[in-house]
Image (cartoon, rainbow, N blue to C red; front, side):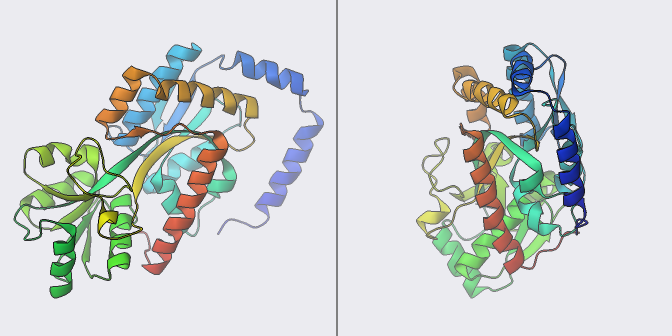
Length: 329
């Protein structure tokens, strides 16, 4: 657990810093001039994933709008915790930002010895997108709809293997929520990443996967995977004929969401400036088209509303992690 003395030390440092703090007028002037040098956007996962692509799209937009490079820096490891801690430790000056997503909400409970408290130490800046995952099966699997899947699982307890991208990954947690709400038993098969999980699902070694839509859409449209339902509360316009899980399991909802965070104590003026520019990007037709290609819908929120989403998601997934007694590798 985090050393209990740490917050007191931080409070002392903040008080000491306040003695020499610049007047509010100077802080506002600094925010108006921001940024005056390149800004880093830290992504806690390797290049090429959905979060990385989103960070680069938003970084390009902000670079064009604000006149300074917004550079994506990948800091993979420990399910995103390494990248997150790097931002927590960075100066709160607006020049180090974090690509925020479901792993941050899940990891808050999954890992009990983090060196930071995500909700306390990261200031919410802006949302980017919300996107569905898809409950999908190999076409050879007998069930063609969610009710058939549940009936088959209850008639064959422990016979269905559920793939995931790793213990505590979003597909794992979304599958665990499905198990809890339906009372079925599935064998969890964790893989080291999305690609090998998809490979074995395509090959029939596992039967079901709650994958993110961008990774699976080409296999779905080619008929190589059968989508049973999307995990969001509403249908996805890219596959309007596919129902939601909640059509059959009332109250089920699990969606991917991404946004931007900054170290706590980052100037509210800088946060508001970034929020305004990101939300302008989410309204831009060209950027909206790119987001739709990632199966996402724009998530234009105020910093406070994005903070509420993070808090709600953290509380929601904490219940699943504890109930399923999930522990990291």
